[in-house]
Figure 1 (cartoon, rainbow, N blue to C red):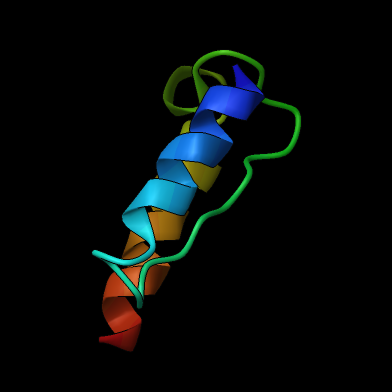
Figure 2 (cartoon, helix red, strand yellow; figure 1 turned 45 degrees about the vertical axis):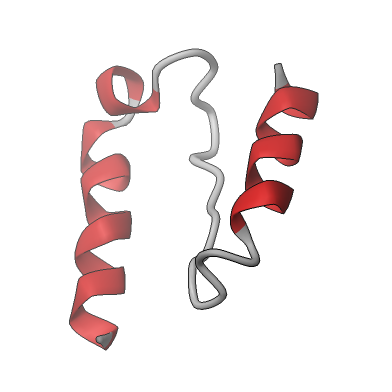
Length: 50
């Protein structure tokens, strides 16, 4: 699964050059359910920078 994600990220870079990726530690399949606070903090911190 990680290989697929890496391919998708690599393909999106030319379209979204200012995008960023992150990993939610200790989350396996569904970070939004396993670590909701951390998952929600990432887009919030990104939106505060723009």
